[in-house]
Image (cartoon, rainbow, N blue to C red; front, side, top):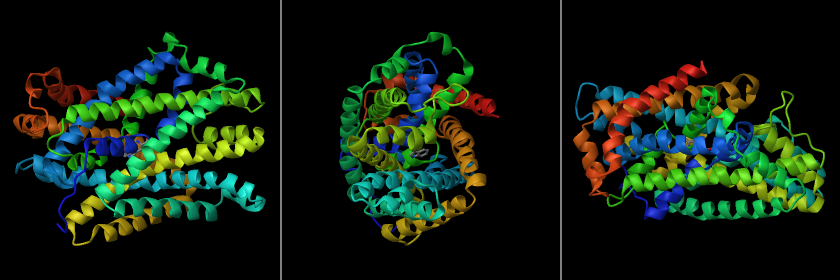
Length: 448
Ligand code: TRP
């Protein structure tokens, strides 16, 4: 090991870094329209329940394993097997996680780059650089490669500075800014014509829809992605938490923040869509559902900003700056996974490891960009739809069936001395040992 292992400097530092990881593009471009199309307020309720009933317990598995082993996922899983013959399998699972984290970053950096280029477009317009402005928002490989590189470089620069000086410092700066910008945009959009209709669609509960198993399963999947589970990100962040902290409490705060910001994003996106509708922008897809995801972000909202003239330039800039911030506090948590492995396994310094991992992942992004139609969606499906839940299930099984329960308890007791008599300890160990794996198998089964 080349350096002394760093820790987050404070509880708040961890909370902001982990919430920074969790709050990302998923919260803003997926959640609001999903809620609106699936029963509004009723969906919010289901999502809230699932976040705490499924995602939170798995987040806890990662945090406990990570803090106990104080190592990358590969060594962490191996260490918790305590010398049993099954230990190498733990290393293999951890290695799979590192690979998936890297692959997730390879497509996330492409999308992050789009956010940065869209944030620059209003600036180019103000400077009367019309050709540049339209180049920035048109899909082309030169633009894609340039901005994926820019985004990856930002990520590397932060990770290279370390846990405290990079990840924690920048998450602590950017997360309050993100919340501030989000509130600002919400307040502004709510003053516009049509906004209240959007709020109604978003919030009025339609309980007839929430019984659908399909819906519950898709909400489960997004809760998983949203909390950055299953690839070792949270395991690594857990490995940087001080011993005196109560893990169940910290995990609860992070889950709560992630859900809260997703819900808040709905207060921006849904009113904005109906403001767009009031100004003549199409917001429904051909099948009658609300336009969502990339088309929402890169077509519907820019069309809305266009109708707003000068104000639209400011709002457009602020919105895409917000998206870029959300993306970068998530991407650093992905890059940290292979980087932590590399510095613990080789003689490389953190800086070298960060640039090396960044460069390799950028090469993968470039391959994806040159085969966009074939690879982009496929990589997303392989990593987020199949690998993440599968890995999450393995983490649960590992903790439940391989690691000693007394060791788990001892780790939790470090920061929470009274945990043994708590409801958490009565429910959680068997819950992740049995219930979570079954539920995850059901999710994967359904998605086939
Ligand atoms: N949670 C982030 C989002 O909602 C994305 C993310 C960050 C992530 N780190 C991750 C997803 C690790 C999967 C695995 O956008």
